[in-house]
Length: 144
Ligand SMILES: [Zn+2]
Ligand SMILES: [Zn+2]
Image 1: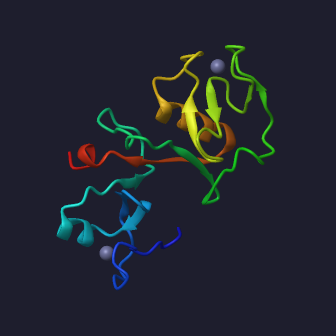
Image 2: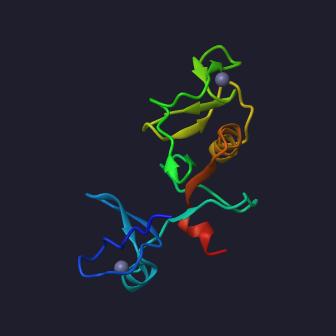
């Protein structure tokens, strides 16, 4: 595990517990204490087993890590097959679109509708390549 430090305050030396959406900087690694102090919404990185109440943070795609490193789908050497829908080219896992919005992003193929959502799709892809699906959990749902 990498120990990403909190970057919300330059003087904070605590490990980041998640990320906070910043209007200019984008996703900023932030510790729970800084988030609490300012009433910020902390979106936590989560890689556990999907529970019914788990929701992905809005406007983020899940990703897959192999040996602790996010897989860059634009340069990965995993074998590809045509997506069963015939609309979305070649994919590593049928029904899962990889390299969406970023080289790491994973989404379900809406044309195939094999998976309930992006998280399900990322889990299937992770199983295929022997990795772990990770995503930013919705801050609201995280407190349940
Ligand atoms: Zn902090
Ligand atoms: Zn498809």
